[in-house]
Length: 121
Image 1 (cartoon, rainbow, N blue to C red):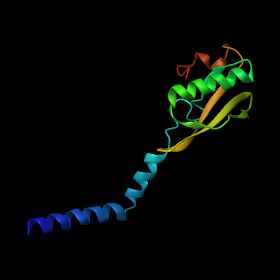
Image 2 (image 1 turned 180 degrees about the vertical axis):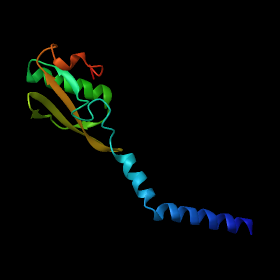
Image 3 (image 1 turned 90 degrees about the vertical axis):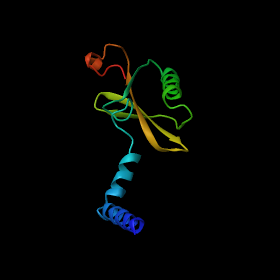
Image 4 (image 1 turned 90 degrees about the horizontal axis):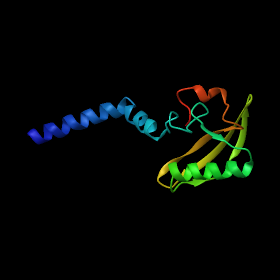
């Protein structure tokens, strides 16, 4: 008698939780990449000081090997937002959702944002 009551209460609780749509919402939030991580968005882009495209490729590859070992990366794409230039790399892993990593391309260390507390990402 106690076991059947426990099962009934458990099933009722699970159906109420699922009926509110909370179970689907919780699952979706887990799979969204955190935009606050370094390189997760334009605002938290990894800053690279480079003088040539070859140097840019090498620094992006090194950073990705260090922070996303085992992930497959596509070639970077350059995007410009106002005066700022960004390299965007799409990375994939068989066990994780795919994501983009953002790199802000700087020509020198004299960047106006270098005084911010978030520098260097």
